[in-house]
Image (tube, rainbow, N blue to C red; front, side, top):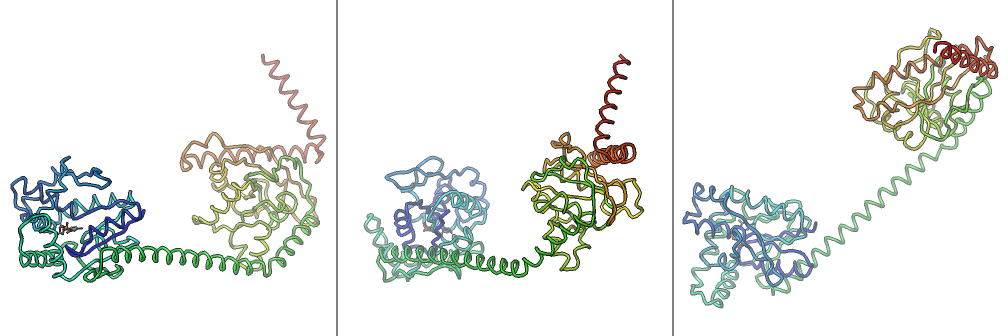
Length: 478
Ligand code: DC
């Protein structure tokens, strides 16, 4: 929103000038002084004393201020009556100054003014706009003139309207109001450091308007310039970062490629049902874990360059290892704490259709048993949050270099029964579902290796016969 705030003592020409500025920019003009005058008018109409807090405050509940457009100009209404003429009576200036000292009145009107400024492009003039109502406004002005000049202008204005007043009286009133406005306890009139001061004593109306418009233009240009500077700085930073990244990038990429190749060659692994593995779509891939080199093998044989692998951050303490691991798709996670960055990276990768390998046991099975260690709950969380399938994989036995390692990839499954539930309520149950699926896969890989001697053909035949048997049993049962 455009908010132009103009403060200054009475008679400095604020309202006339603010009106022209608003018209030139095609935005609304809000005369906040008129609001204080309307409150004062209501107080007087009710026969109460505008300087007595206890008499004024209860009346605020009965005040409704609104605006109507007359000749393209907003005129103020008090409880639906247009009072724009009445509030300009000479004595109303004094009464308005009295009610404006009452904090409850100010809070009542400031609230209205802020709401208008939040929803409308507006030029506001008053006493506390730059200091209290809109301290963060981008365009702030303090418009003043010598008190004798202000009194002269007011005197001529009232004379033209046919009101009988003396110049001395008006000067005394102006000084009185200046004192009241500048010395009240709550939100007094003052020039803020960031307001642009214009002394209009020897200036024409047009000169003041032009000065304000030129200043608005200058602030806009400065802002654009600083935006351009900000963009330049951030682009330069990025270029520097990229340079840093690419400086030795080729080296670590080379090492990563070598690791991929070497692991594939040395960690001889027979992978069963490789087709179950989704290369280019999101999936939380889980596997039992025996050796520190298991991830490298899976990266080399299955994940490829698109996949990610979650590794404990202890592995990546060394900066060389960390850089190679990153090239291999490593996401380092701090265990035992809510690692927000790791969570973001994992979900980010899944949302970018990348498979992410997680070892749900959280650590290696150092006893080298076939039994699975208890599962951590992260897998369930990620699979539910990203609505990603889980691909279970299982090594038959302890893995090792130059051994004939065997890995079976199970059918993907989804945790969709938990998607519309609160994650905290279902994490444990979902983790049990995942654990059970891995136990099922354990039975399958045992059959494949032990019963079918590692032959996929025999295994498929075995499964076919098994299902025939089941059908026959079901048939007999009937
Ligand atoms: O600008 P004006 O003369 O119409 O204002 C009438 C009175 O209202 C003035 O004495 C000071 C008070 N006023 C104020 O305290 N804060 C404002 N934002 C506007 C006006």
